[in-house]
Length: 77
Length: 499
Image (cartoon, rainbow over the protein chains, first blue to last red):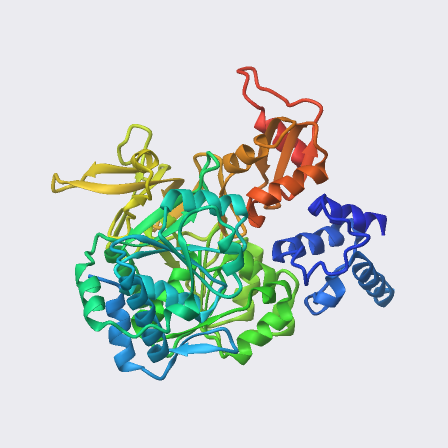
């Protein structure tokens, strides 16, 4: 989780990612942020997020995103 | 000469055909024609002649109608948008000094808080006006080919945005050559991606007016979710995509095309920056038989100036060429001595011909620096635009983009002067030094600074003045700035640090 929070706060140092729960709905993250996020998560956390997982529900909060990462890790075993 | 002539003609051929839609709500050519002319009659009643009229509306078929209302009234439109930070809007309003701002319900409250003295009017009120046939005829007749049709604002290195004014003659020529080259007809269904204050959107708007095509304005939020975006494109039977590279990459980078493909798409054009070969190949592999074009050109030349249609068997080596000029456009490469460079040599890409803009609005100094005169073969003087891009010709005579001459970069399809970001950072209290770098490999903008504010406070301030695509992707606070022997900020060293 710390690694993910690091990635997020590098993107937007002014956002409190532990509290925000509408990152997509409130337009805090834009499409370039999403490309960056997925790339960074791939490189630094070794988890590949695919197109079908890129939904507002999965990206609206750091918690939701972390749950997604955990799910992918479990699936990949 | 007025671009509305095209709409006058098209409405006769396809009155009940959908012109612009957002997927839920649309305007037919008849409705667009009618609304624009009602709006124009309102503006004529205000006695505005050849004046800038600001349009501040959300991206919608009505926004396009408002543009055409301004054009029918013989004035020129200046789009602003809620995505723009307050300071940028203020600078634009200071430059154009408009008498009137056309708003919709979503923007009127914001507009009323602007400090300028213009009248704020609702689009809904404009179209209540009856059409004043005589006034409109007079306004259109009065429009000359060299009168401006619009002013679009783009990044300026001093922190003051530049307003590019393009004439009716340029815009009409653009509509004609672009639809001819890309094969646009009434059967085309565009999936429009860019915001309408950005010149990339002119491709769809102008070709639609010219040919009777249909433009589907894709809701912005879909560019955050690649699968629903593709579903929307299929549902709307979109067959033509003229997108910036970063939007195409957004789809291909996550393996979207393996899950869902745009079923109806027959033509794809891309523009704005160099298409990473890997992403281009993903599209090509997924979409065999689709015509693909690489387009190139600055806002200062009405959008795009050159094109390269990529042959199916074309092997991409380093970069896809930007090709050859459109009909009516002339491109040459200028060396440091002001002359055309020799064969195969690199020079500054200079553009002449019908697309060259009138200049920067109310800014003779910056206009004179970039729009210059050149003697042509017949001995007469021709106005050209110096792009600041370096290019060379390959063995087939196709133009290859090499790099920029200065600190202007392309980021997410938008053109950004790193100097503009630096100028805005410097304005913040407690900042002593700053410099921005842009990594070609990652496409990221990094800001280095020395000063008191922490990164969070700095970002918060910057969001008030910079458009979101201009915000640095990474911020690094330094104890001291590295300098070169000659006393300049050592950008090379910062770049190394960045990588």
